[in-house]
Length: 282
Ligand code: ATR
Image 1: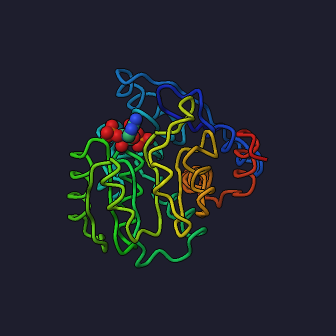
Image 2: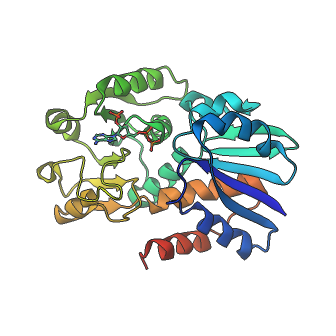
């Protein structure tokens, strides 16, 4: 049997075990996915010992290790290196390579809902690990990308880094996440993405955008998937906007990780259904 782990702290709320074990079972693979709480001070030892053993095929990496794990790996894929964060590790005979599938997952989910994003104006809230991954991928496609963050300096630093990214094809700018910044950013926008943790359980009454700013011509993606329908999405729906939960991004980043570990196409419907059932969506 081969093992894949989720390395994070804490890991109790994760949907990943449900999703990957359903997929392994569907394809009859002798794989098992397990949650591994790893404290920050234990990360180096865990990666250099446990992760390199022959029965471990790889791992998903989550909060708070996505950035700090990079320095413990043998190799990091070029895009993940630009992003500065890894969410998937593959163990090839003790050689650990890191990837980032968060951006791939978000792009696929967005393009399914929106269609071709070329030329679109996209507003992303947040400058943490998830926002970074999504922003790098978006910058290769969209016309304009505006990054807003509560801590303005992080938004500015991310915008500056993306402008230097060799694959960037977009106009990039940064603003503070406040009503004035949002008002400016949303002018002419096609898509809004909440990549902050605002609205996540247990703070389900929080929203990063005043409902008065929401419009019917927007597509709103909230990467918070628990609860699946956040206050932001409920208010966007009430304003007539199209909405997208974070479930698609979660599943599609997992689909890409599954392929890296097994070399096989993931049973996507099984993964989607298992997550929706666990979240009580269906
Ligand atoms: P992740 O890896 O999930 O992106 P993270 O790196 O901790 O997590 O990033 C969390 C993001 O949510 C950040 O952009 C953070 O803003 P700051 O950089 O200002 O901390 C944002 N965030 C968290 N709580 C917030 C709040 N109450 N209001 C606004 N933004 C918030």
